[in-house]
Length: 511
View 1: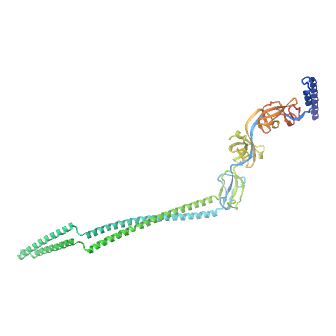
View 2: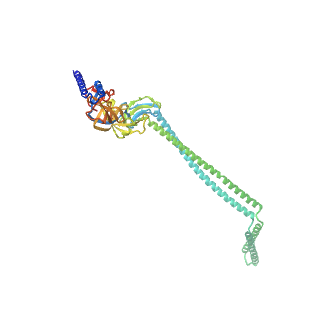
View 3: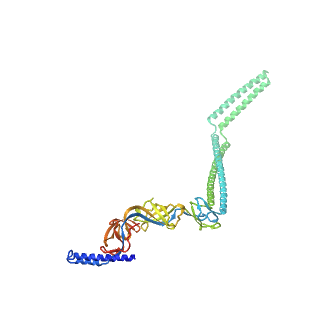
């Protein structure tokens, strides 16, 4: 019934319009267009039926300038806990969904083999420490021996050199004979001895005369005789000594003195040759020092081996490097794990959720770090999340787009990696704006375009300047005003001045 009413109204409108045009033509006939051309065009236009189009009444509304972002959720901390060395998995202490803390032991390998290796390395270290002490003792002994040999050799050289000097002096004395002073002294000794002899003889003669006279006793005569004999003997001795001084050393004494010099010289050569023993002892000290260095290097290597074995034993306790949730349990107790297949657990920290959104280069300058992003996650329809632009990568991709990293607040740990999210960054809000459907705009170039406005049932072209575009809504900042009727569909089949009819009920633009 309602459709019939609309059809009747349209027919009535068409008939009325035709009558009006005919009346107008009758009034102007022969007036404004004497040649009748304008009248024929008007008659042709009036005869063309009205085109059915969609119309919308422009109304003031609110529009937001936003940048849309999308991407798959990721986490900064997504780790796989695995073994460093091959061995049997002894225990796994957590399962999927369990919350773990950083440093918590989550699994353990069998320690038997590595404990044996550690014991062996410790024994090797003890042996090397013992060899180091032996090398130090050997060095101390070699130093003592070097010092003793050096002192003994120096003393022998000094003594033999002194003996050689004395032998040379004695030989020189023997070969040179008596000195003038010695000859004079020998002669003076002879003269003194002769004086003593002569006096003793004179005293003896006097005592003999007195004895014959019975003036003295026989004992006194004997004493005088003894003194005379002693004086005679001293005189003879002085004569012989003086004779020896005058004659000089005997050949045998000279030969003996020369032999003594040669023997002393050989002693010096022998003592000096013993200095080689000192060099040998020095070589022993250097060898001992090298032995210490080698032993120290062996100790360092053994200690490093012990530390490695201790670390390998500690590494059998698999610890979570982060605080997070067990995503997957990849191995069970009893499994033989190796470097080729080391994974035991996957742990993710869902507190640090983010996604990387591609941004067209035309919007790059509109974004900045710290801007808020309203997020929707497809897996959680109806839930709103708040994000923040944490980083904008400065280099464009091959597709001439930039990447913005959006970090989310994962309240309640509901979000998980690999979920798909979309969001929008609000740049500005215009209230009371003139907004039309995007399809309403024709020949859009930059922020310019054109639309058809309906005036008295006729399509009138308007050039418009555009503002914010949000989805299928576009702000018109110049060229339209509220209340204008614009053609929103079917405008591709009409031209300006065509008669048009609304093919649907009147609507107003809204966001």
